[in-house]
Image (cartoon, rainbow over all chains, first blue to last red; front, side, top):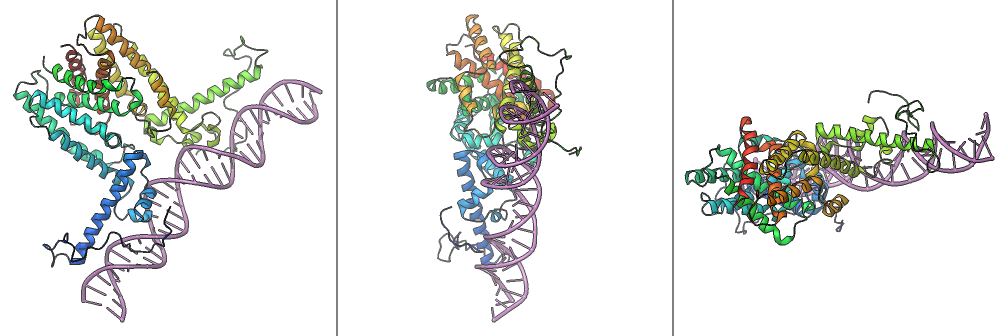
Length: 235
Length: 235
DNA sequence: TTCATAAACTGAACACTGTTCAGTTTATGA
DNA sequence: TCATAAACTGAACAGTGTTCAGTTTATGAA
């Protein structure tokens, strides 16, 4: 619990950004939105981020099951009900974390220089696994968010694939053009084969309950399994 | 809810097995354990199974998150507290379901005839994926039981691998002897590469949110990805 | 058959969730 | 200065897992 400060309606946090503040947005005042209204919007944005920061901290340390509204409320020193002014429900918070995760994963896979050649695809896979291993709780949330029904996340996902998969599809297409993948199977099948491989290795690496493999062989496993998959896709 | 029958202490269910019952165990009466004591033990066993049946029904239809003590209690027409006379806590019920799952998965992989040859290994992988796809909720529970800490499941797992993995290790060793896998990497690395592949494909197939692939290409994906992995493990 | 004892079982409680909403406090702009 | 809107709280509701005192039933010896 800690502080026993009496809490009243409006909080001093987030601090009102004074006119002297260099971050003040002076380019967009006037007719459509009043100055204070836009400031309020920025404050709202800040509190939004604060909530997500707290949620992510819990996620990293204890996993997504430990994320509770009341806990977050205590961390950011607001009442639990205040959170519902910023997020529809607990699921919306998790979804925001999932979105963050996919953005970061996408950045990891996109940073390889030549995705179209065999080494490039290999490196994409290794980057993917690296992200998963370094953010195990987040990765777990991204692919196993728990209650599987009702989420509109499902709809969004099926509407358009996450960008990390788009990157893979592009690499596969470039690889086919460059004769890296010569086997005559549809591009999605090729891409899913590759994705399945790295996802499986990453999942197993995260769920450490399944490791009777010496530590020094893990990176060998990452390299060999991804290599084998790429080699296997050329007849 | 249904019946409003007044419930009192001891239940008529499970029915006492009379002496006329052909299932009566007459081989072990007498000194160590009295007749009625052994009957009670059998009744306990039955109620145990009844609880697990109910739990599995919920699991299959709604996923493991929907398994609640109170719901199970209603299904088997006992009070919630009665369940704690048979299982330490909710986690113990889930663990029992997980154990069932690994037994069944093991049976699936073990039923291939020649696991040591390439086709055998391939078939093991396909059987594995088939199990996962046909028991998606169970498979999800087995590998993502939720709260990851505190479980003594962790200890048991790290003590000895599940039998399905032992079967794979044996197949890989036989495959190496038969020159199916000629690449010079340690057996565990080989086995994990194969397991990672099928696990990844199975996971993605289950989390259908990630499918923009036409239905008719799914079995092709299963076959091609497992094939590619096996081919890739020979230099 | 009687009866103390052990086993099985229940009901009420506790502490914890997510979520809602009436009511209070604060900021706003005329 | 002051009505109004926005921000926020506190208490409540319904749900969860779990515990435990107390009741009901079955048992086996007297």
